[in-house]
Length: 210
Picture 1 (tube, rainbow, N blue to C red):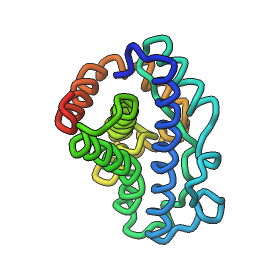
Picture 2: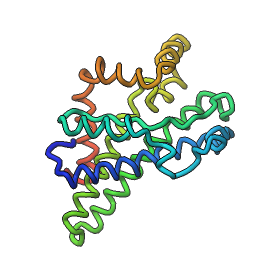
Picture 3: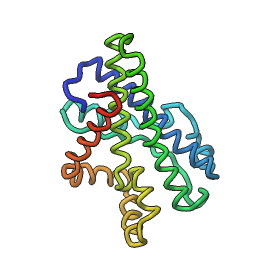
Picture 4: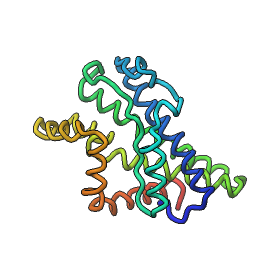
């Protein structure tokens, strides 16, 4: 998805990354707050200030290095804290907190696609390319985060409906945090990368025809 990028393109990826991840993480906090948990607000994470949500190593440097090496990037922000015991509707409320992040990225991608489709003939080529990259970043966030592997957001939905023995395994994986994502990327992603890329490309074609 991010092949043959110029220096300007990489800068646009970086800006798109910061905007998209900031809104993604903030929406987790707002949803938890709406469902009765003030943890994010108490810890100053109920904000659109990117400095509160971005980790320089895992959010910026790591994905940029992977892009430069021609590898599939993955982006890890500072998770917004919330207390599932204080969220309304139990596991289903927790699933809503998880899902709002990637769904927000899907909405951002749709907004970008709307701009492309409506103003296509009047867009400067540089601006057009920037919006395309912004859409690609958000489609990537949406698809990747919907993978039902802890601690990715999609796991919240699976957890809400999974039997107890699967929930137990998922809790054990989630307890190791970022290491769980590394394990997924190193040991599992190679087996699902093809279908994931196909889904991303299909969604991009549906949204903007590329």
